[in-house]
Image (cartoon, rainbow, N blue to C red; front, side, top):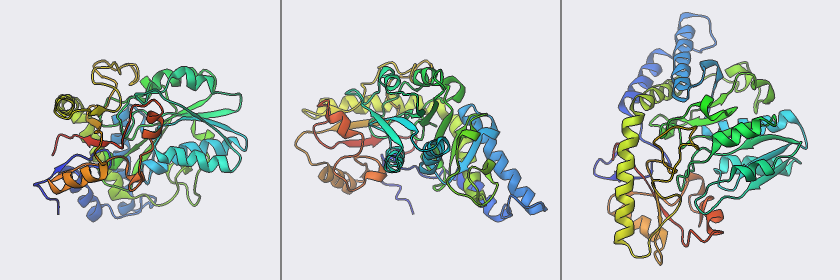
Length: 376
Protein backbone atom coordinates (compact mmCIF):
# COMPACT_ATOMS: atom_id res chain seq x y z
CA UNK A 1 0.00 0.00 0.00
CA UNK A 2 1.26 3.49 -0.86
CA UNK A 3 1.57 5.92 2.05
CA UNK A 4 -0.33 8.97 0.84
CA UNK A 5 1.22 11.12 3.58
CA UNK A 6 4.66 10.94 1.99
CA UNK A 7 6.19 13.06 -0.76
CA UNK A 8 7.78 11.01 -3.54
CA UNK A 9 10.62 12.81 -5.36
CA UNK A 10 12.36 9.90 -7.07
CA UNK A 11 10.50 9.78 -10.37
CA UNK A 12 13.71 9.25 -12.35
CA UNK A 13 14.05 5.87 -10.62
CA UNK A 14 10.44 4.81 -11.17
CA UNK A 15 6.94 6.21 -11.21
CA UNK A 16 3.72 4.97 -9.62
CA UNK A 17 1.28 3.19 -11.92
CA UNK A 18 -1.65 5.44 -12.82
CA UNK A 19 -5.14 4.15 -11.95
CA UNK A 20 -6.16 4.26 -15.63
CA UNK A 21 -3.15 2.10 -16.48
CA UNK A 22 -3.90 -0.38 -13.71
CA UNK A 23 -7.49 -0.71 -14.93
CA UNK A 24 -6.35 -1.42 -18.48
CA UNK A 25 -3.92 -4.05 -17.21
CA UNK A 26 -6.58 -5.66 -15.02
CA UNK A 27 -8.88 -6.03 -18.01
CA UNK A 28 -6.04 -7.52 -20.06
CA UNK A 29 -5.24 -10.01 -17.30
CA UNK A 30 -8.84 -11.21 -17.23
CA UNK A 31 -9.85 -10.93 -20.88
CA UNK A 32 -6.60 -10.87 -22.83
CA UNK A 33 -5.05 -14.08 -21.54
CA UNK A 34 -4.71 -15.68 -24.98
CA UNK A 35 -1.40 -16.14 -26.76
CA UNK A 36 -1.11 -13.36 -29.36
CA UNK A 37 0.38 -15.86 -31.82
CA UNK A 38 -2.69 -18.11 -31.70
CA UNK A 39 -5.32 -17.91 -34.44
CA UNK A 40 -8.39 -18.54 -32.27
CA UNK A 41 -10.59 -15.78 -30.83
CA UNK A 42 -8.67 -15.52 -27.56
CA UNK A 43 -5.40 -15.22 -29.43
CA UNK A 44 -6.78 -12.63 -31.82
CA UNK A 45 -8.10 -10.60 -28.90
CA UNK A 46 -4.66 -10.61 -27.29
CA UNK A 47 -3.01 -9.71 -30.61
CA UNK A 48 -5.39 -6.80 -31.06
CA UNK A 49 -4.52 -5.51 -27.58
CA UNK A 50 -0.78 -5.70 -28.32
CA UNK A 51 -1.16 -3.91 -31.64
CA UNK A 52 -3.27 -1.17 -30.09
CA UNK A 53 -0.51 -0.61 -27.53
CA UNK A 54 2.03 -0.54 -30.35
CA UNK A 55 0.08 2.26 -32.00
CA UNK A 56 -0.11 4.15 -28.70
CA UNK A 57 3.64 3.82 -28.11
CA UNK A 58 4.44 4.86 -31.67
CA UNK A 59 2.21 7.93 -31.45
CA UNK A 60 4.06 9.20 -28.37
CA UNK A 61 7.35 9.44 -30.28
CA UNK A 62 6.10 10.17 -33.80
CA UNK A 63 6.96 6.72 -35.15
CA UNK A 64 5.08 4.20 -37.27
CA UNK A 65 3.69 1.22 -35.31
CA UNK A 66 5.74 -1.30 -37.28
CA UNK A 67 8.88 0.48 -36.05
CA UNK A 68 8.15 -0.36 -32.39
CA UNK A 69 9.73 -3.50 -30.88
CA UNK A 70 8.46 -4.35 -27.40
CA UNK A 71 11.12 -5.46 -24.91
CA UNK A 72 11.41 -6.32 -21.23
CA UNK A 73 12.42 -2.74 -20.35
CA UNK A 74 14.75 0.11 -21.19
CA UNK A 75 17.88 -1.84 -20.30
CA UNK A 76 17.02 -4.61 -22.74
CA UNK A 77 16.15 -2.06 -25.41
CA UNK A 78 19.56 -0.39 -24.97
CA UNK A 79 21.32 -3.74 -25.19
CA UNK A 80 19.38 -4.79 -28.27
CA UNK A 81 20.40 -1.56 -30.00
CA UNK A 82 24.06 -1.60 -28.97
CA UNK A 83 24.91 -5.28 -28.93
CA UNK A 84 22.58 -5.95 -31.84
CA UNK A 85 24.30 -3.40 -34.09
CA UNK A 86 27.81 -4.43 -33.05
CA UNK A 87 27.28 -8.17 -33.41
CA UNK A 88 25.60 -7.81 -36.78
CA UNK A 89 28.58 -5.75 -37.98
CA UNK A 90 31.06 -8.31 -36.63
CA UNK A 91 34.32 -8.32 -34.71
CA UNK A 92 36.34 -5.11 -34.88
CA UNK A 93 33.30 -2.88 -35.15
CA UNK A 94 33.61 0.48 -33.40
CA UNK A 95 31.05 2.21 -31.16
CA UNK A 96 31.07 5.81 -29.91
CA UNK A 97 29.24 6.82 -26.74
CA UNK A 98 29.57 9.38 -23.93
CA UNK A 99 30.87 9.36 -20.38
CA UNK A 100 27.46 10.12 -18.83
CA UNK A 101 25.36 7.33 -20.31
CA UNK A 102 23.23 5.02 -18.19
CA UNK A 103 24.95 1.81 -17.09
CA UNK A 104 22.73 -0.12 -19.52
CA UNK A 105 24.72 1.54 -22.30
CA UNK A 106 28.16 1.73 -20.69
CA UNK A 107 28.09 -1.85 -19.39
CA UNK A 108 26.93 -3.16 -22.77
CA UNK A 109 29.84 -1.34 -24.40
CA UNK A 110 32.26 -2.69 -21.81
CA UNK A 111 31.07 -6.24 -22.46
CA UNK A 112 31.57 -5.78 -26.19
CA UNK A 113 35.03 -4.31 -25.60
CA UNK A 114 36.03 -7.45 -23.69
CA UNK A 115 35.12 -9.46 -26.79
CA UNK A 116 37.32 -7.45 -29.14
CA UNK A 117 34.97 -4.69 -30.25
CA UNK A 118 36.28 -1.13 -29.98
CA UNK A 119 34.58 1.59 -27.96
CA UNK A 120 35.32 5.31 -27.67
CA UNK A 121 33.84 7.17 -24.69
CA UNK A 122 33.56 10.91 -25.39
CA UNK A 123 33.88 13.33 -22.42
CA UNK A 124 31.33 16.00 -21.50
CA UNK A 125 31.51 19.56 -20.23
CA UNK A 126 30.78 20.80 -16.72
CA UNK A 127 27.02 20.69 -17.33
CA UNK A 128 27.19 17.11 -18.54
CA UNK A 129 26.68 18.05 -22.19
CA UNK A 130 28.62 16.45 -25.02
CA UNK A 131 30.01 18.53 -27.89
CA UNK A 132 28.82 17.18 -31.28
CA UNK A 133 32.24 18.02 -32.72
CA UNK A 134 33.86 15.65 -30.21
CA UNK A 135 31.49 12.86 -31.19
CA UNK A 136 32.14 13.37 -34.88
CA UNK A 137 35.90 13.52 -34.30
CA UNK A 138 35.73 10.08 -32.68
CA UNK A 139 34.24 8.39 -35.75
CA UNK A 140 36.41 6.02 -37.75
CA UNK A 141 35.78 4.01 -40.93
CA UNK A 142 34.83 1.09 -38.65
CA UNK A 143 32.25 3.00 -36.58
CA UNK A 144 28.87 1.30 -36.79
CA UNK A 145 26.96 3.04 -33.99
CA UNK A 146 26.84 6.25 -31.98
CA UNK A 147 24.84 6.09 -28.74
CA UNK A 148 24.04 9.36 -26.95
CA UNK A 149 21.26 9.66 -24.37
CA UNK A 150 18.61 12.27 -25.05
CA UNK A 151 18.37 13.43 -21.41
CA UNK A 152 20.51 12.50 -18.44
CA UNK A 153 18.90 10.54 -15.62
CA UNK A 154 20.90 12.23 -12.86
CA UNK A 155 21.52 15.89 -13.71
CA UNK A 156 18.81 16.30 -16.35
CA UNK A 157 20.99 17.60 -19.19
CA UNK A 158 19.35 17.47 -22.61
CA UNK A 159 21.89 16.43 -25.24
CA UNK A 160 22.22 17.79 -28.81
CA UNK A 161 21.10 14.48 -30.29
CA UNK A 162 19.49 15.94 -33.42
CA UNK A 163 22.74 17.59 -34.55
CA UNK A 164 24.79 14.50 -33.72
CA UNK A 165 22.36 12.28 -35.63
CA UNK A 166 22.34 14.49 -38.71
CA UNK A 167 26.10 14.57 -38.97
CA UNK A 168 26.75 10.93 -38.04
CA UNK A 169 24.16 9.54 -40.43
CA UNK A 170 25.82 11.48 -43.25
CA UNK A 171 28.73 9.10 -42.61
CA UNK A 172 26.49 6.02 -42.74
CA UNK A 173 26.68 5.47 -38.97
CA UNK A 174 23.65 4.26 -37.02
CA UNK A 175 22.54 6.58 -34.21
CA UNK A 176 20.89 5.32 -31.02
CA UNK A 177 19.53 7.43 -28.19
CA UNK A 178 18.54 6.23 -24.74
CA UNK A 179 15.41 8.34 -24.27
CA UNK A 180 14.17 6.59 -21.13
CA UNK A 181 14.25 9.83 -19.10
CA UNK A 182 13.12 12.08 -21.94
CA UNK A 183 10.01 10.36 -23.28
CA UNK A 184 6.99 11.69 -21.44
CA UNK A 185 8.98 14.68 -20.11
CA UNK A 186 9.82 16.58 -23.30
CA UNK A 187 8.35 16.36 -26.81
CA UNK A 188 10.13 13.53 -28.62
CA UNK A 189 9.74 12.98 -32.36
CA UNK A 190 12.01 10.40 -33.95
CA UNK A 191 11.83 12.09 -37.33
CA UNK A 192 12.81 15.49 -35.97
CA UNK A 193 15.65 13.88 -34.02
CA UNK A 194 16.73 11.94 -37.11
CA UNK A 195 17.89 8.92 -35.10
CA UNK A 196 17.77 5.25 -36.14
CA UNK A 197 17.17 3.65 -32.74
CA UNK A 198 15.49 4.93 -29.57
CA UNK A 199 14.92 3.20 -26.23
CA UNK A 200 12.11 4.05 -23.83
CA UNK A 201 10.53 2.42 -20.81
CA UNK A 202 7.07 1.97 -19.33
CA UNK A 203 7.84 2.43 -15.65
CA UNK A 204 9.30 5.90 -16.20
CA UNK A 205 5.97 7.19 -17.58
CA UNK A 206 3.56 5.83 -14.93
CA UNK A 207 3.28 2.38 -16.50
CA UNK A 208 4.24 -1.07 -15.20
CA UNK A 209 7.77 -2.34 -14.73
CA UNK A 210 9.19 -5.08 -16.93
CA UNK A 211 8.21 -3.65 -20.31
CA UNK A 212 9.82 -1.16 -22.67
CA UNK A 213 10.37 -0.61 -26.36
CA UNK A 214 13.02 -0.04 -28.97
CA UNK A 215 12.16 2.16 -31.91
CA UNK A 216 13.88 0.78 -35.03
CA UNK A 217 13.67 3.03 -38.07
CA UNK A 218 12.31 1.35 -41.16
CA UNK A 219 15.17 -0.18 -43.13
CA UNK A 220 17.44 -0.55 -40.07
CA UNK A 221 16.10 -3.86 -38.74
CA UNK A 222 18.50 -5.86 -40.91
CA UNK A 223 21.46 -4.13 -39.23
CA UNK A 224 20.58 -5.60 -35.82
CA UNK A 225 21.20 -9.12 -34.55
CA UNK A 226 18.77 -10.47 -31.93
CA UNK A 227 20.02 -11.06 -28.40
CA UNK A 228 17.88 -14.20 -27.98
CA UNK A 229 16.33 -16.76 -30.32
CA UNK A 230 13.25 -18.91 -30.18
CA UNK A 231 10.40 -17.47 -32.21
CA UNK A 232 9.26 -14.87 -34.69
CA UNK A 233 7.68 -12.39 -32.31
CA UNK A 234 8.50 -8.68 -32.50
CA UNK A 235 9.82 -8.85 -36.07
CA UNK A 236 12.17 -11.65 -34.96
CA UNK A 237 14.22 -9.17 -32.93
CA UNK A 238 12.71 -10.08 -29.56
CA UNK A 239 11.22 -13.60 -29.68
CA UNK A 240 9.04 -15.03 -26.94
CA UNK A 241 5.38 -14.84 -26.01
CA UNK A 242 4.44 -11.22 -25.43
CA UNK A 243 3.64 -9.88 -21.96
CA UNK A 244 0.15 -8.77 -22.94
CA UNK A 245 -0.95 -7.09 -19.66
CA UNK A 246 2.37 -5.26 -19.36
CA UNK A 247 2.29 -4.11 -22.97
CA UNK A 248 -1.33 -2.97 -22.60
CA UNK A 249 -0.35 -0.97 -19.51
CA UNK A 250 2.60 0.53 -21.37
CA UNK A 251 0.33 1.56 -24.24
CA UNK A 252 -2.15 3.19 -21.88
CA UNK A 253 0.67 5.08 -20.15
CA UNK A 254 1.97 6.29 -23.54
CA UNK A 255 -1.46 7.60 -24.51
CA UNK A 256 -1.82 9.47 -21.21
CA UNK A 257 1.72 10.87 -21.48
CA UNK A 258 1.00 12.23 -24.95
CA UNK A 259 -2.26 13.78 -23.78
CA UNK A 260 -0.87 15.46 -20.66
CA UNK A 261 2.70 16.29 -21.72
CA UNK A 262 2.43 20.02 -22.43
CA UNK A 263 0.45 20.94 -19.32
CA UNK A 264 2.45 18.74 -16.98
CA UNK A 265 5.87 19.83 -18.25
CA UNK A 266 4.98 23.50 -17.86
CA UNK A 267 3.80 23.00 -14.31
CA UNK A 268 6.83 20.91 -13.39
CA UNK A 269 9.19 23.50 -14.86
CA UNK A 270 7.69 26.20 -12.65
CA UNK A 271 8.00 23.98 -9.56
CA UNK A 272 11.58 23.07 -10.53
CA UNK A 273 12.67 26.68 -10.87
CA UNK A 274 11.09 27.68 -7.55
CA UNK A 275 12.71 24.74 -5.76
CA UNK A 276 16.14 25.44 -7.25
CA UNK A 277 15.93 29.11 -6.30
CA UNK A 278 14.77 28.28 -2.78
CA UNK A 279 17.51 25.71 -2.16
CA UNK A 280 20.32 27.91 -3.47
CA UNK A 281 19.11 30.90 -1.45
CA UNK A 282 18.50 28.98 1.77
CA UNK A 283 21.60 26.74 1.89
CA UNK A 284 25.03 28.44 1.89
CA UNK A 285 27.35 26.85 -0.64
CA UNK A 286 24.66 24.70 -2.27
CA UNK A 287 25.54 23.91 -5.88
CA UNK A 288 23.20 23.09 -8.73
CA UNK A 289 24.56 20.24 -10.86
CA UNK A 290 23.83 20.32 -14.57
CA UNK A 291 22.63 23.22 -16.72
CA UNK A 292 20.96 26.22 -15.13
CA UNK A 293 17.27 26.71 -15.96
CA UNK A 294 16.78 28.93 -18.98
CA UNK A 295 19.64 27.59 -21.08
CA UNK A 296 18.41 26.93 -24.61
CA UNK A 297 17.64 23.26 -25.14
CA UNK A 298 15.54 23.53 -28.30
CA UNK A 299 18.29 22.30 -30.61
CA UNK A 300 18.97 19.34 -28.35
CA UNK A 301 15.34 18.24 -28.42
CA UNK A 302 14.91 18.28 -32.16
CA UNK A 303 14.31 22.00 -32.49
CA UNK A 304 11.27 22.07 -30.22
CA UNK A 305 10.81 25.68 -29.03
CA UNK A 306 10.25 26.59 -25.41
CA UNK A 307 12.59 24.04 -23.88
CA UNK A 308 15.60 24.85 -21.76
CA UNK A 309 18.65 22.63 -21.47
CA UNK A 310 17.41 20.71 -18.44
CA UNK A 311 14.56 18.27 -17.91
CA UNK A 312 11.53 20.07 -16.55
CA UNK A 313 11.32 17.90 -13.42
CA UNK A 314 15.00 17.57 -12.49
CA UNK A 315 16.66 19.22 -9.47
CA UNK A 316 20.13 17.97 -8.53
CA UNK A 317 22.10 19.78 -5.83
CA UNK A 318 25.29 19.21 -3.87
CA UNK A 319 25.51 20.52 -0.31
CA UNK A 320 29.04 20.96 1.08
CA UNK A 321 29.95 19.14 4.29
CA UNK A 322 26.72 17.15 4.35
CA UNK A 323 26.93 13.39 3.85
CA UNK A 324 24.39 12.52 1.18
CA UNK A 325 23.42 9.21 2.80
CA UNK A 326 22.65 11.02 6.06
CA UNK A 327 20.66 13.67 4.19
CA UNK A 328 18.62 11.08 2.31
CA UNK A 329 17.94 9.12 5.49
CA UNK A 330 16.75 12.28 7.26
CA UNK A 331 14.52 13.21 4.32
CA UNK A 332 13.05 9.72 4.41
CA UNK A 333 12.28 10.07 8.13
CA UNK A 334 10.59 13.39 7.36
CA UNK A 335 8.41 11.74 4.73
CA UNK A 336 10.32 12.69 1.58
CA UNK A 337 11.64 10.02 -0.80
CA UNK A 338 14.71 11.21 -2.72
CA UNK A 339 17.89 9.63 -4.05
CA UNK A 340 21.44 10.37 -5.10
CA UNK A 341 21.41 8.63 -8.47
CA UNK A 342 20.09 5.85 -10.64
CA UNK A 343 18.76 2.60 -9.19
CA UNK A 344 21.58 0.75 -10.96
CA UNK A 345 24.09 2.59 -8.73
CA UNK A 346 22.26 2.20 -5.45
CA UNK A 347 24.77 1.66 -2.66
CA UNK A 348 27.70 3.07 -4.61
CA UNK A 349 29.51 6.21 -3.52
CA UNK A 350 28.98 8.12 -6.76
CA UNK A 351 26.51 7.55 -9.61
CA UNK A 352 27.93 7.26 -13.10
CA UNK A 353 27.32 10.86 -14.25
CA UNK A 354 29.12 12.54 -11.37
CA UNK A 355 32.63 11.29 -12.08
CA UNK A 356 32.99 13.08 -15.46
CA UNK A 357 31.39 16.20 -13.99
CA UNK A 358 33.83 16.10 -11.09
CA UNK A 359 36.64 16.33 -13.62
CA UNK A 360 35.34 19.85 -14.27
CA UNK A 361 35.17 20.49 -10.50
CA UNK A 362 31.41 21.01 -10.60
CA UNK A 363 30.35 18.23 -8.22
CA UNK A 364 32.18 18.57 -4.89
CA UNK A 365 30.15 15.93 -3.08
CA UNK A 366 27.67 13.20 -3.93
CA UNK A 367 24.45 14.97 -4.76
CA UNK A 368 20.79 14.82 -3.83
CA UNK A 369 18.48 14.31 -6.80
CA UNK A 370 14.86 15.48 -6.59
CA UNK A 371 12.48 14.52 -9.39
CA UNK A 372 9.16 16.34 -9.45
CA UNK A 373 5.81 15.14 -10.73
CA UNK A 374 2.24 16.23 -11.25
CA UNK A 375 1.47 13.92 -8.32
CA UNK A 376 3.27 14.13 -4.98
